[in-house]
Length: 446
Image (tube, rainbow, N blue to C red; front, side):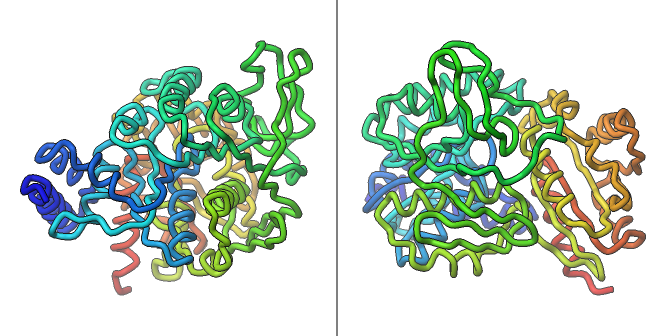
């Protein structure tokens, strides 16, 4: 075992420990230090995974899908390396391996479940070639960083073709993701929902993939699920939704999610239609890898969402739900999940424009905020660096809001003077700090 590899592990673990004591996540910094001390560390450790490496890519749902898949494999007795925190660029992926290593620098893992940022695949695939890719969806996201969707698709096509033996588990309901999988020669498996579940006629969602990527003709839809996800076909060239290998049937969404896939009846105490896709993707990946997943429902009962993905807190007498909302498609699904709760509710919306968020926040104007006009919305407080922009966006929807730039003050105000049911919706860089605030407030005695 190389001394520098061991030193890289020790340095990463020490850095992460210090950062956490300072109230910071520290994962990305740990990975950066490890790669600086010993650049081949990720390549070597990935090669020591005994069985398969899964990566999860796509615009929305990566963290939840990846963590569900990891938990599903662990429930079947496998040892799994996973970047649970959602740190999905090169440094974060390296950290997942080095922080899981022993002090002697050794890896003890049957599988790895790694969430990967789409643009970062160019830096990660040279380090290792995954066995499986789960491709969740492709939506417009952070225009100043990714550009238009075509750029992201070109990046992914290049890295997929560089790993010809990697199979792709693709969301067949997404015309963009399905087209990308068809364009590559890799073996592919599909998952999706073949029946209409919700009526989306009253939404003003932006349909990202409205035009056929093969010939440019406007796609015809039998129905939509949300955004461009649905049952589509091209009337000109014949491009169409592929046959679905893992098909969710009898889908029920409300205070609880349930559906059938094959002979399995899956039930989860989650809200949000998008979580049907997250759960289905994890199930499909596990089954495709050869697992029977006999403990899948028990895993769902035990699974506790973390890292701001529908994460629950209790502060005094107020129930608080924290969720990430970082692009139009994701925010519209957040709105659907919030409005599925028919009780009176307060909202705190936190919008930042740091580099990791994307400094272009024009995407707020593509979100269907008009759905927050109902009487069940007790109040909306806007916060964060771009709170004024968020307030202006709501004003154009004729929705009044409270302005409070300080996030902790915004949350505490709704705890003290709210209706007892609070949703906190944040974009990317606001997530970790807001979560720390909620955890601290939850632990304080009245």
